[in-house]
Length: 359
Ligand SMILES: Cc1cc2nc3c(=O)[nH]c(=O)nc-3n(C[C@H](O)[C@H](O)[C@H](O)COP(=O)(O)O)c2cc1C
View 1 (cartoon, rainbow, N blue to C red):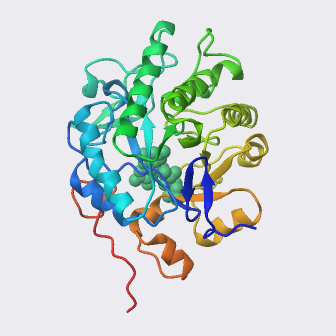
View 2 (tube, protein in one colour):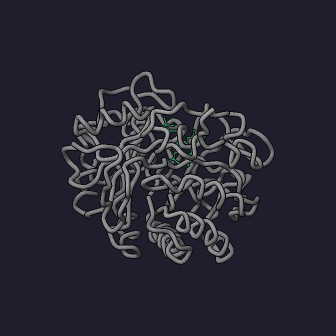
View 3 (cartoon, helix red, strand yellow):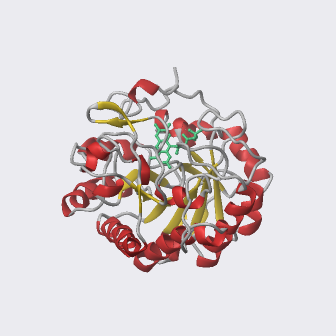
């Protein structure tokens, strides 16, 4: 049986422990989506993670609608990421970039045009924008002829991630963003090769994953899915069929790891509305499986003991505890996290969470 403190090999990446840092949007980049030096401090503080998965990072202006979130489409962004990856490596860590296209969740105030999605749908609620909260608007369905261009946008971001010194990439296919808007059947009403059957709805996921593999090799590409419960209005009627099929196809591509954000029915960051899907995904996926949502050191170790997961990704606990692996190992008390500073600005609630110090 594996311990959270045993090393694990993710394709070509050697993680010294199984306590991973989940992707966390923190909104500290510039308005032009360029990383800033405090991001290097923040990630370097957390270099003790077996693997750091960065905050979601826009692949293109079309795909990014979060204030002060970073991107990876320009040379300027690449140069600004280099000190971040360098600082993590100097501290002995590993860091992969989470690649993000938000689809219909991009408010037009960011781009000057309607967002794109699988179909003409509108995300529920309102977006964080530079001018406060604004209602989402209806998406324009991507035309078939545009899909190669979207794949090229992912490829460019993947190349840029390599140039910026990352150890690999994770495709953000979770949480109601573009790929998830193709996957799940309450958002995808297409009648072409990208809609309808499960095989068609997973097509974009697989094509994008292949594009990332073209750049990085499968052994440095991970994927994140959220197989259970509503995410920003995106949901599926039969996740127990859809997600194992997606996992099987990803398994056939030989990706380095698959991460799931699957809360329970009483989850504190999203809630399940079906029985757990992760055991079905476990059976369908041959590679390294990482579980996330509401785990702590005890429940994470229990998931490893039951053979449900190979590693655990911790979000909010890593946000407020830069030395989380040590705190789990020594059963030390944890810093609480402050929601008011999740999305910035500045260093407060970002780089000032203290390391444990014995009283
Ligand atoms: C402040 C904040 C930002 C987040 N940003 C992202 C993100 O950029 N990409 C992503 O896939 N999930 C994101 N999530 C979800 C987390 O990765 C994780 O799934 C969630 O926090 C549940 O895990 P936890 O219980 O360990 O915190 C975010 C969560 C929080 C609290």
